[in-house]
Image 1: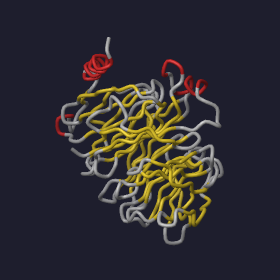
Image 2: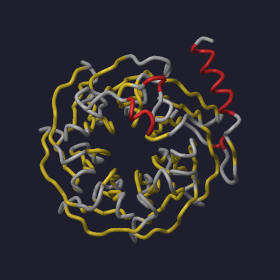
Image 3: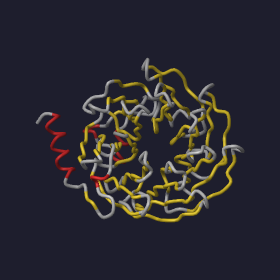
Length: 348
């Protein structure tokens, strides 16, 4: 069976698992969702208007993905796929040793069959973001305690930025002038100047920070503290923690709605005891105003451009949940590849 036919069959199978559960249905959604599926070394694409799901094998065990600002390219980072393309906890055992580099794959969004470029991404890359122009990619290289900076036009590594220990999730400020980086290993957030490409501050935040999320006005940053079951709130002006908000078990990714009203927090739990809760924090009061039940192992979260729908990757369930942000209800569930981790949204 050739690869194209195999992907078509996967697509047809996945279509049966786009389930509408009330409220907004799949036909009312627009744009595309992409997931990095760690446990079968694949990338899934959800066409939201039709509910069609296509899944493609990748040459890496993808941990995180990111659409470029112009929507033309999809970036995926990870270590080379182990034997038989296994990923997740099993695939970790088959990964190359720490002295080998991970990879950044660059895909044209119209063809996820094959990457148009494969670039070095540092030792054990975790997350990737770009600058506002989509010309540079910033990859957290967790084994190097650094960010690998890649010129996407020339397709070459142009520098390294020293961070705290075991950098993981990172996001640029709304004005693009800074990056905030969650360092799992030492409980800090690094602040990086994107002009000088240097770390200019280190903010202690708490135990095991995994990801950061800016409020749309750029004044505050929310940081998931996996081992505290809390989210820290950083005041950007003073570069200090001003509050902590209790959420469900083992929070991982965070993402704000474009209207500045709500920050969504995906709570994964553990592999043996997964959580399936997403906390919706009201930004005006810094209180959890709703807790939404999704699938097992709620991990990644992204909100569409309209702010009407939040999408959550459920790593244990192998699904993506669509949450109506006005009702805080799951409206649609999509079946994707195994172990969906990172998630990103593309407008039409």
